[in-house]
Length: 268
Length: 347
Image 1: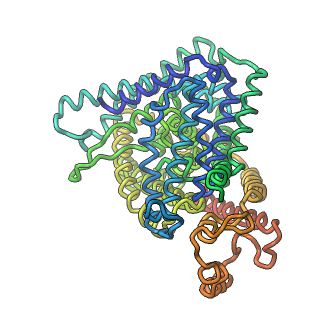
Image 2: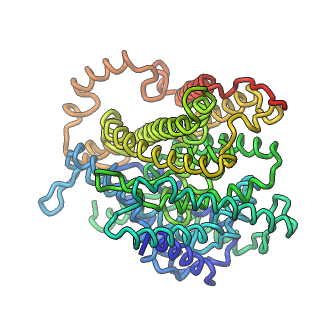
Image 3: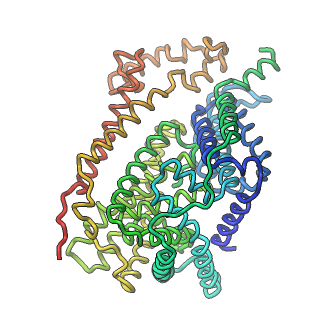
């Protein structure tokens, strides 16, 4: 399967997840966005070697995924983008910082190893919460939250148009790629002689499509502003949800839970 | 080059959001002044095209590997720098939100690294001067502008990634070594991207030249932001970030110190059993290194040397640092003619 079709499947999969129904799906989009940002800020504020502070913060996504009924496995496929990058940056830490911190079964664990694991875990945790936001919130609701945050109208409208046209463009580019591949078996990508004409011809068609789109939007009364079908005020449950989760995040971030438990268990 | 959230410290992420947000604000203002609702669907469809176009593999002759399109320069050439920048923001936001390619908190940094340089620096410093020049054919200048623009902007983007990661204290890799790894890789990537961009733009130029942005079009006096306005916005952003956010810089000993020597005041014993007298900050070697550092550093530990107990020192350092960066940014803009007074084109 070509990458465009994979991307289309991922997009429609996210749409299906966002249209499910749960306590988390029903929350106001702004509260979900706020909780996600606070959680990510808490994660990235953890210093590089404090793995013990990071681990209790796993509780938050674990509980929220359960409430939302989202299978966590779907999220891990998306790690393919960020984990190699994090590994490329973090792999130098165990190589350059070899000072032992403690011994584990006769093997010295170095400060570099801890900072490497901390970095990878940070990447996984931040992705878990970003994925949860998009898996429980529809595109319309996200755009509505952006508008409440005073993100300029032009940017939000363009976000919606682009999102709607991505599926179409992916299908066209995918069909073209398949057709090219069938005519050039054994060739790994687009040959240099077709670099311009391949994407260029799709670009010209897209420009014509944009003209047609503008015409149809004008006929429907478009004046540069989209109207959102579902807009609502935050209710008590939304406020309670945001307050409870943010309080839990701050508690787990500031209170040395791991060390407390360690003291209790080891007596030291 | 998409940065993940985990690679950034909160202060760096916030700084990059302010910088990218300022550039986005300027772009929105420029487009509003144009008052052309037709641009919206064109921008949306072009952004979707770039998104799909980034997934196409282009075979690099003689290597067996393939290259990809990034799109910032192409969007600027087709839509102009402001609309191109907003379109790239949307592409990066969708990649981040729906495909986990780049982080939500790192979006500001990614917009700066991949969209700002491509759409503004590449357009104003490379594309526009070359396209305005009189040498060669339009096609030749289009190819030269695309290749040079992509190479330069990717180099700047890679440099920013190194600076942001180093400022966040994420990697033990020395800054120079990190640069030496990143810059050559992105030189090759930029060259390939430039060739792909030039091939597409040359195809568009030969098929429908009217689709390419006419250099100088839309740059009217009414649509221009005043130099004073831009400087005030930049100064406010710099003061906000440097002055306010640096209060949150931690004054606690760093994690490595804790790991090596423990922190008796907090009740932790020496973790590694190292003798702080011999290996710690008070050792003879550390004293010698410290005296050298004191003589060479402008703002040691981001605070004034004479008043290291005063927390205001951190704030002052933040403001001074932000002011230096803001001045450098204004210098680059002035060198590129960003503020140059342009003649209103009259027929």
